[in-house]
Image (cartoon, rainbow, N blue to C red; front, top):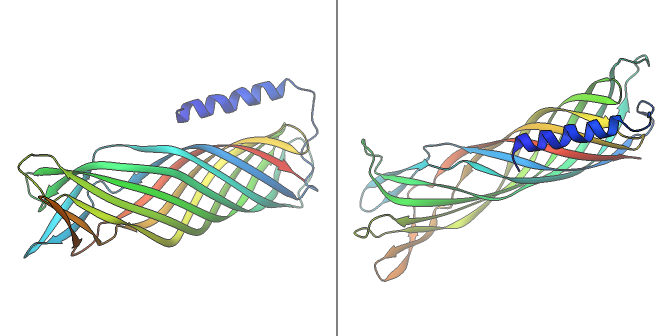
Length: 262
């Protein structure tokens, strides 16, 4: 399902909901909620990251990514809503804020590309690589509802929190005359991530709502492992990089949400 399809589904839900019996504007006295979200995320990495090998002298191996990374993401969280002291009317500006703790994970996705040996110009591509990526995070998010109008609640949000990430690496030769394919151990690490976003909720009842959220998330700098094995003709030998691959990662995500307030 594409990002465009997510938007179509959301607006179909809004159209169907609008035909239902009239529902009162949100009662902000219901202060807690639980939200479940799912959608698509586009993961962006540096197109020309590199690592260093040392076969008697340092050699830079430049990674040129050739595929676009898009995968399924899910999220679940609990929030506390605080009503702001603003007048109640049909166009209710800045009605509330929400502080939420959200867990998110995108399913493992693999960046693919080619290796330019010794970063030559023009490039020499003798190896193809796979770079499996996985990430989960626990974010403390703050959401500001901009207004409440006919059960529609647009909002902006920002958050930060710890991210637990995983990077693998494997390459393969692209020519029968080459050998020396490298497989690195998976690297697991913690770091902080931050995100900003915007969206809208539609109030179906006093307790239930649906929503659509866009998020930009900065997942920081990732690093591969330095240790693994190298294919030497008939067997694999232990191998260490002179310097691991390092690259920045961010994502653009659209999520469909279902929220229950209690």
